[in-house]
Image (cartoon, rainbow, N blue to C red; front, side):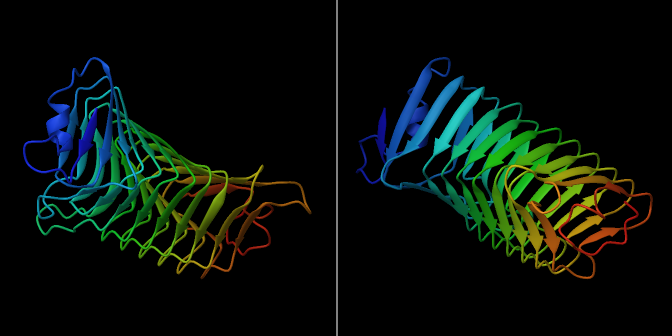
Length: 294
């Protein structure tokens, strides 16, 4: 099915209108052209692909109170190639959905005084796969992964967001391979309350606070094994571990190290009370500074 959002009235010119014509239990593809001004709700579909033709866009129509693309109770949905602009959240993947975002640019959300989000992408109680996406210029977080969600993100760029570049919380799990997390106003990556974070390729640099911050019995694996990982030039510690958190640092053997955590202030790896723990912080961070015992 094709939608042309620039078509005149009387023709199929909205994504929402096209969704009403589909059988949610079938395999469906909508090829979208033009500039769409609407808030799209995808609910209870089995397999759906929204495919942008020639750089199509989806733009908030709610004045910042609604989510531009909201996905609920959907087994498998792909959103690929769009510029997604504005809204309270650009893409919200919720309610046990599986969401695939490919080569989208998600930007310019609104930090609403009532809702207060302004996030590029939020994944809640769901699974998501990001590939080649750019999450930028949002007043809140670039990427938020919460409430036992599982997210794999590759070739992503999360930059110039006013809040954390990436937030992982409340039992969620995130893998970055590779990713560029840069120039965000707060922490590059913040991990809280029994959440888990892993990066195996990419860079976390020039963020306003810590490169990676762990709170509340959270865990991180920072591993430059097959490809380089660099954490540098952040406004706070490179990696900061707080209450009951743990991080593993792993690089290649001496002389081949692909993990570099240097040039952060005041420490490249900082262990704060109470009872944070690390392994490899004194040996595998490319010569950076640390107050951690191991």
